[in-house]
Length: 313
Ligand code: CDV
Image (cartoon, rainbow, N blue to C red; front, side, top):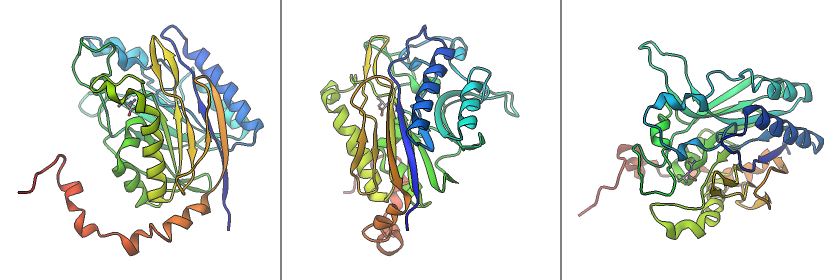
């Protein structure tokens, strides 16, 4: 049996501070039109698609950063993207900074969020980032900040898998892709395709020795996660030099075998695509990675019982 889903990874080139949301949405619509013309049923955009990667700057008063967040989705500025997608009958996944309405305690929350929108325009899934990297405080010695832990709260919901696009779809955001627990949690829910947007600066301040390995680590983790869980993975970058900071491209679509079946070659707006057989997942889920037959969860309790390392004597 075959269950094909034609997916596009719509890499974005840089978005500068002065670029308007309207201009970004125009670029997204252009990529979506291209995706539709090439037969895609679903197109995936990067993490924080609508703006420059603002956690590279620190502001003392968090509310000064409110203008980077979306308070509704669709919003007036993103409505044309939703309208175009519905008129074309194409689905999409979009990353953005979310600022919620006040909760019962009057508190508004900030999340690094990605949504999944079906071909009829319905938002079928919302995921908020779990593994938030970087730092909470201003670190003036860095050439640029990575203050995601100041700007975003941890997801209150964790990982989910949604029945959509004829399969079981999951989402993760950027740094989530480096953690095996991300894939396995969704793998245990039968995920068949994981959609992931990312912003990965080439310079890694805590250990610049890793700078030259960014591309290697990017594909290493996503290929391993795909293979070990028998799932497709679609990784989509915001790439190139944004406000002086160079970020990794190398967006890719990875098969359940762990093989890369498509990869971008530029650091600009660029669409790659693949016709993915979701039934191909079974080749791995029902053989080497038949979880029910081969996993030994009785030996994995430390994974959820503790956060950090506990040394054994
Ligand atoms: N936006 C991200 O989550 N970036 C991270 C950090 C570590 C650079 C990443 O994993 O690429």
